[in-house]
Length: 385
Image (cartoon, rainbow, N blue to C red):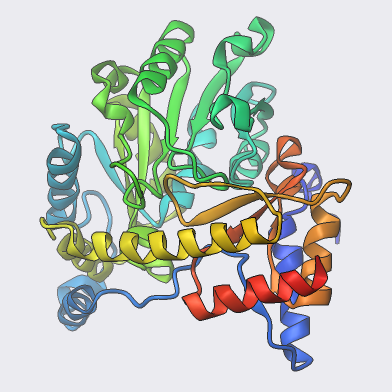
């Protein structure tokens, strides 16, 4: 059966290929330490599960979540934004519930990008930005980032011929895969850049609650962002709720309305019981759950970075998210290195080139396994390296 041309233009998702090989190895009885896909290993907090249990038994939550969905979820989300970032938002006009933040990554280009128009995408960056753009008929324009720039794109170096036809700009901080955190001064620059060119700035803040040195900022701490930006939030990483598929988009009221219109034509909103459970999570005012997870990831980060250093492998010390972004040995490309680690050490890592051309020479390791498994992974890598 013939696939559409747009599918053939989407580059292969190397993380899926590595995952396929991992599953084959496990099926063959090999003990694989999976440092690939970023899926928290700790359970969803009990108080969230209990809220879900109550909500799922209420038949009023068994219907479509059309329109506003659960108003209490919207209110809890904007209250959370106010508490953490000092940002006051209208829960009905400046927010839309999401089936995970990837929901918006797929649907925003359908709302804003015409065939042939550009979408500015971080390189290295989350591959879904490219696929969402291509599925909408857009043209991805990679913005190279490097260790020298602090893993921030140089916006003013983008050719005017590209920015003249650009409709969207993706940013993602704390960053996947590098662990970099943007400064407010960079966000001010990005907001000014987007406003000057009438570009929608989309800040994917899926990891905003996972930080190590100081809290990661929201783009809406720049007041002018309300005129040009949307920010995507997810409970997947913050509350270990990846399988629940719940998040929200906040920002410019017109942009939110267009996103909601697209979603009304393709889905019926998140299950209402999950919205009630998410409202309970967001109402946790003391940050106990996220603070405990950040302490855990910090210990794992320090252990893994020190272990890699002992092997002569240089890693960027992540300031946020739960990944370690490390250099491949000299002369070894990232895909070869990832395959070697899986085949010879039974350790899964993601090759940097899977995140874009600027990721070549690097690889990503997740902090979502216990410390004893991280130590074992380093020891296995030592025998190979």
